[in-house]
Length: 187
Image 1: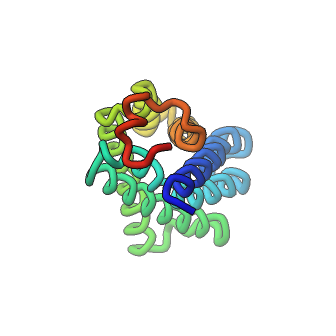
Image 2: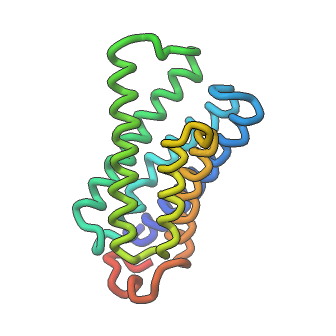
């Protein structure tokens, strides 16, 4: 399997991870925060997103460079940390009072995701590989994170960014024509 096929498969996994992340919003609104359906969606999404975050870099690697790689790694590691956190809540109930380890893993997971998202937003916008309006999904994600009454919709916009980019990577649609020619990986 060559690199182009791997990137396409990872793009499809990003698409599925985005759908699973979007599933957190209705699950949380219907059954409540930290309910079994919401945590199941969150755990599945975290695993899928940790596997596929590097595809968001690889599909535009020639234009994003080292900062794109850093963003991809931060997103992958942050999602992996979140998968552990969600697994702990899902399997053992509320373990958030357990002390230093939980506090450090929460800080690393959420901090890595926030920093990785901000870096990926900037490098994706500057790379001009994906449509510029994809940046709106990133901005909505960050706005929902900061405004308390929109917090329930954060997962919706987070998943939407992965669905949009994953779909573009998997199908090859949504790329700018000049970006396809100059991409390190011709998708």
